[in-house]
Length: 117
Image (cartoon, rainbow, N blue to C red; front, side, top):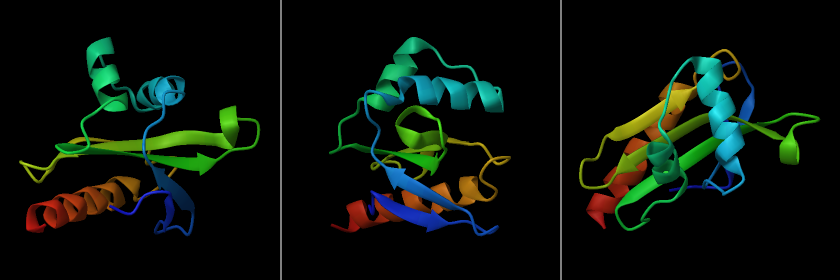
């Protein structure tokens, strides 16, 4: 999976794709609040910590002046390689139009590549 790279969305905005980091907890909670999704703490921990042999998790961020580390989490997605389809996909479409579909494509490609290897 291509990580630490950028995607250009339909409106021309760019998002950065990267692996989750421990400091993303607050950003993930803020994203969930913006899109109105609840999550329990165990699921939150599973999103931030995962087995890369069985699952891929990717965060999408935008550069935001004044934000922690200069970025705002605008999306998160995950795929379990054995299943091949995203089992977690949350995108702030108001901040990043088209991100949900773009993340789904990235995750599907990662799972397909993993199964082919």
